[in-house]
Length: 221
Image 1 (cartoon, rainbow, N blue to C red):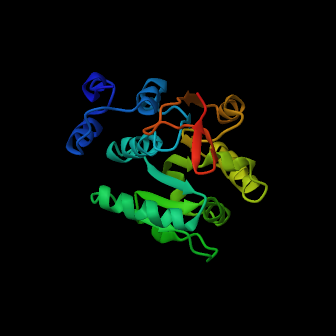
Image 2 (image 1 turned 120 degrees about the vertical axis):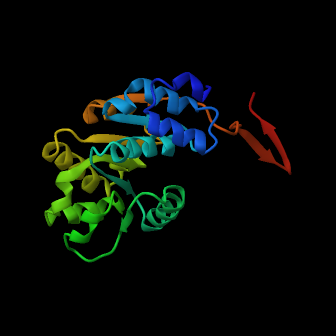
């Protein structure tokens, strides 16, 4: 869908940024998220395939909050390696923002994070920050939960579930954006998050299923 069609629905600062980055079209997951209330502080659960543009939905929620001085943002990822990857990407993409990464094993409130706009961390690290009553948490407005389907993981799922519950209880106006390509019960999870459900099957590369035998592949019609 052409970007220009959504000029009235996208805040001017963000629209200009998308134009500057060379965006001419938005992907289905992005347009559906805008219609679902991305810029109206609505919680969203975005369930679309890998490469369908989910990350930009999270970025737009973060930028909307930061560029309009609404509050800080946290981007939760399941792995330290992924946190490092996202940190490098965001630092390069948004040099005007103060971005921090918090993935260390030190159990403390890390008060220095008060000086940053966006903090990337694992759920376990944010849990530690909550338990130590990090003072900057009161200024938190947007939380992006990448790979939110890990709520079903027996190892880290309970920590993530409790974390989201505490944040929603502590910060009444917080906006939570859950991102995932694989959720078995999206309607139930959206209801638990009090979120608008965004589902789309569009993917940048067509996915085909087939059987490989004797160096030949027979694809399913």
